[in-house]
Amino acid sequence: MDRRYVKIGALAAVVILLGVGVYLYAGGSEAEKIERTGIVLEDGAKLGLMVPQHTFDKGITSISDLEANAGDFKGKIIGIDSGAGIMEMAENAISDYDLSSFELTTSSEAAMLAALESALTAGEDIVVTLWDPHWATGTYSIKYLEDPKLSFGEAESIESWARPGLKAEDAVLAGIMERYTYDISEFSGLLAHIENSSDSVAVAAREWLDSNTAIKDRWLGDAEHQSDRGEIRIGLVSWACAMGTSNVLKHLLEYVGYEVTLSTMDAGVMYTGLSNGDIDLITTAWVPLTHKHYMNMYA
Ligand code: PBE
Image (cartoon, rainbow, N blue to C red; front, side, top):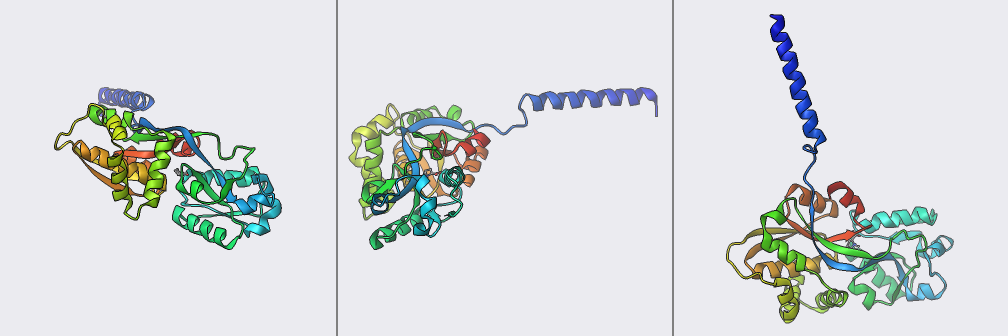
């Protein structure tokens, strides 16, 4: 082959490789980031390990008291779904407090609450992963164990997040999401209303929204009904708090003309789906610590 063509070919290859290098360096290969749309609850959330009042009263008041009394708990900390951030925190607590006689069981929020309720009824000891806001902490006679090593962090906030690009595409939606904030009594009131209702979560959430017109108006702001605003897919995990805020948001968005679907999934699937655009919105991002792992991956 003519040496001239070899040289031109080599030069072209170098130019292409440089171009690809610059593109990658500039972040072109990275997936786009998910975006925060609002603060659903500022600072009002917390997490920890909880025990019955009768367990607390016999002197087990701190996570550091667990190891010496492991037998009372059959060596088990009752957890929830494996994707929940609180599970990672509980594993950290096991190592932070040297709870080598304990294992963390994986189940679901519903199964954890059922185990808690039967231990309370039977007067037995149990230690569960639990958090606030949750209707259970106000209903059952239970206490948080002290957490001097802060394995469960300090005050958390709950945020809403959107798939990459959604905020820029839809200013009306971005405005509603920015206004979609609760104070702690509104949030707790919603969860209590849903728990005490004999209707489905969807129906109870709609009732709550329709009977709190001042809150509804605050969230709607200047957004008016317009038909055909498009479809919004909200992803959630079957945690009481996420079900409450997702169902209320569904009704709120339908009110101004969106078509809204709710999809319940595992926490990991929810964040992956948000980052690749399979879902549009979530209302259950717990920060700074609980969902740090997911935020580090996608935000
Ligand atoms: N929770 C409820 C979730 C966030 C909302 C505390 C169980 C979690 O641990 O990821």
